[in-house]
Image 1 (tube, one colour):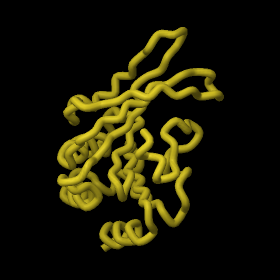
Image 2 (cartoon, helix red, strand yellow):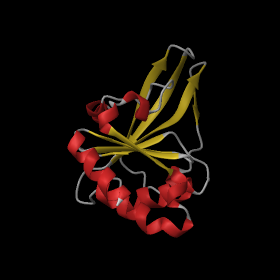
Image 3 (cartoon, one colour):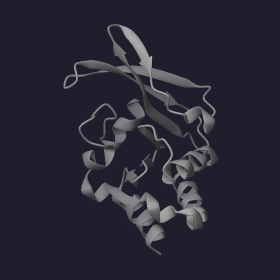
Length: 165
């Protein structure tokens, strides 16, 4: 989960999604509905622009909580889309809820897996609180939005330019 910190966001901040934690010049939001059934090729193009298959790509997600010292796992459904073989769990404490949560990070995620998951989520299927990231970009996806956060303003400008054109 330390790899996320380079984007100045925290996945264990349940008050704000990563988009609202990031500097305004380092973020970009797209309505998920834009990538409806006829625009799948644009969603795929965006994901492959953000995530090169030859680089290390991670997925981190809220996988459960700990109540009365017992782990309770969320049914995220990510395993249908992402091959989960190399993962690490971090337990974080949230003061507001007085609970511990489990955040799981998967390594070696492939762009095609991100695309398959994103396509399902953008059509309204069950989502998990998940981010995908590499050295340059972090992407959060929900039924409503696709949020992209970059380490540098120039990388975000490049993505905005591609999406808008």
